[in-house]
Amino acid sequence: MTATDPRRRLAFGPGRRAVRVWLAPRSTPEVDLAALAGGPDGILFDDGGRRMVGIGTAFDLDLGPDEDGAAVLDHLRQVVLHADVGTPPVGAGRGRFGHPVVAFGALGFERAPAVLRVPALLYVEEADGTRWATVTTAADTSTAQAIPRPDPASVDAWLARRSAAGNRLPHRATEPSTVVVVGGPAHFDDAVDKALVALRTGDLDKVVLARHVDVAFGHVPDVADLLRRWRDLEPTCTLFVLPAAGGRFVGASPELLVARRGEAVESWPLAGTAARGDDPEGLLASPKDATEHRLVVEAIAGTLRPLCRSLTVPERPEVVRLRSVDHLGTHLHGRLQAMPGDHPPDVVTLTRLLHPTPAVAGAPRAAALERIAAFEPAPRGPYAGPVGYVDGDGDGVFVLGIRSALLTGDTARVCAGVGLVAASVAATERAEVELKLGAVLAALAPAGVSAPAPA
Image 1 (tube, rainbow, N blue to C red):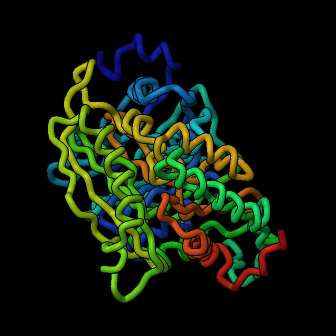
Image 2: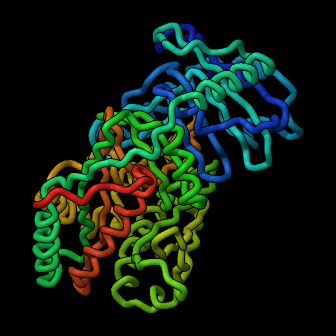
């Protein structure tokens, strides 16, 4: 049954229509993606290869806690795809650039109901410089954001106006902020000590515990300015901002949970951490970090292998270097096999199967989640949950929502976690969580922060 089958259109409301608009090569000056996404209706997902901005809302899709990607894809495929406009590059089309209708979402750590958003305007810059946009309208929803006509001149002019307006917002990056530790520092220290007892008695192989802090800005932060600053600080990470339960979720994630393009699948888990130094060999030689990392790689490989006709898992991790820390990372890649329905599993289904990995929860999974719920002072929400997008072909990318902040009005909730195994040393783990928190606070509060509130 095709996407234009009238039975499908009627089932989901007539009038959901999309037009892909091919734009001329990058204009000068370049489009300011941070300014585009900085407004209250903006979305950004930039992994350094494909740079995507969504603006406004065509429609939202609810994803239940036990649902996989099938329902999402069924809705995305109901959008009537009109003919492309503009001059496409040589070899353009679905095979090269994918389905033009895309939904973004932060699925959350605690497998709660989530919302995926299809923006009214999607703007994309590909790694080779190709630029395109999708204008999507839906008669069954409304958007406060007026969108341009679906032609190249209108879209480019609209992007320029939006970018210029975003750059005229007041910048408040120099104002200091206040940090309040949720539960107090002693709460986190006590949780680490109790977790280490459980690990050393054999009740757990690994558990990841997060420290929660709130940042009070004293003003509503400038999201565009925050995105620019985060890109400068962590240029190799995936930059994102998108709506989430409780506010807007923004961050620079170093960790790929899963990417899917047709049959191709990849994951790049990180586990094992040290303060960034001149010699990364020390991290590679650490038995504690090797154990922590191995648990994550084995869990991901064990989930993907039955779904793949081939899967490559390097024997030895590499060191992934960030601004303040080094991580052990292993890049897995494979070829998916067709499942019932003659299609490989879509990226949302893969995400549901993989999450939460031992990189953000622990092992065994159920026991680790029980400890996290008991030890941490509040639910994690979007922190450490999957963040990314899926298109109408089931392709997409989800990273882990770490090195992040949930913005709500003039405050931000920030979490940072450490992976504990039996060989962990409490003082070392506490120092590691301070490093990770510091990496986020450097983006949120460049002028410095006040001392944490006492326990």
